[in-house]
Image 1: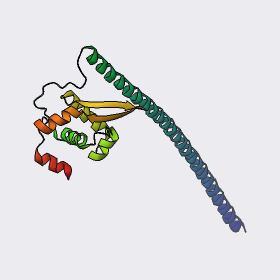
Image 2: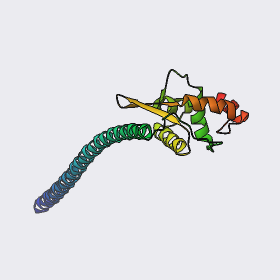
Image 3: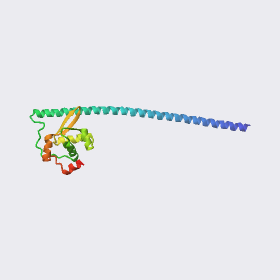
Image 4: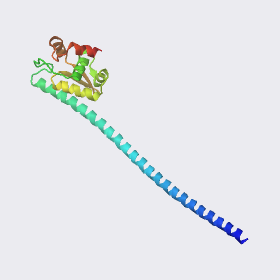
Length: 190
């Protein structure tokens, strides 16, 4: 009997130590899981904070862009007023014999040139016709103005409407000031 009790006691001791080992393992697992959960919560909180900051920055950029557009319109009006005050017509064309445009600027020029006289285009219209972004179209138009292409811009409800000056269109038809080749025109038409 002693031998049987010894093995039962031995088995109970082994079972008891295994149970305590399993309990210790479960506690370590619960602690690790709690740590992972806390890290995920911190990460989620950080993502939410970043999202809020991005949204605030986007709203601020939208407001700044609207202000820049209004400032641009006011500067154009000021330029027109100053030219009229100085005795120059805003339609008066300098005697430019040629204007060098790069290929994408020529494409913008052709979009404006072929647009109906009654309907000025928006940056979005031009971008859509060229399959470009509005940002790039704005850059092309700014470059064209700096190179001497007379472009009329009018703002209605903070939207810019763009057209080529009609007298310049006539001069372009007669003198080919921007040096459009037939190939460029054919490629544009396709």
